[in-house]
Length: 217
Image (cartoon, rainbow, N blue to C red; front, side, top):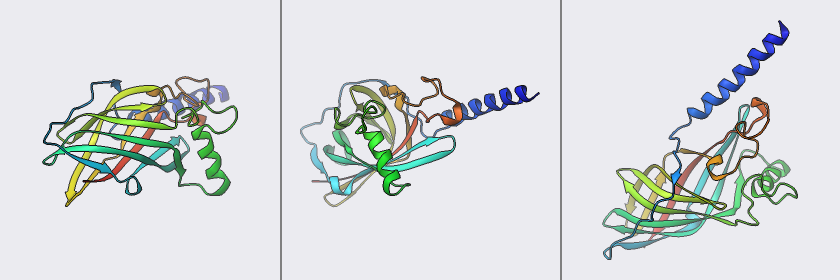
């Protein structure tokens, strides 16, 4: 009886974990890289204001979430009228911050994510080897921004909903929260799908992201 109960409980945990992953908001379907968009001669260049721009992230286990930010190093967007024709953003992978923890706990998680801990360099982003990531625009259809996202040495095409607005010489691009599957970029540490790990100890494959970019002429 006890053994059967444990089997049922374990199965329920796996099912709950799987359902939670599939219900992620605006879950991205990562596909093969596409040709980057090119701008017309009439396009105006907006330069990313790195100090005013940020990416917010949420990573999770079944029992807890961790939140944080990561900075843009720079980038540009080419706009014709109020239509984005092309662009690219460089992400500073060494700028990862953890906002739900404090002190040593926050620093330990930051170091693990960045891969600056001996023996754990390849668990997540291996920043010493891959100090930047990149997003290159491949298109904008209605409110869906499409682009090639490169993490470590893997490039995948993704699309997610954005809102673009203008105020004088300033352009603001803000995404809705969207979800990528980190394993699409080969980041498999702690994944229930790639490691022999109990479901309630696994790290979700999903990372939730929100992009908030300010750029000026």
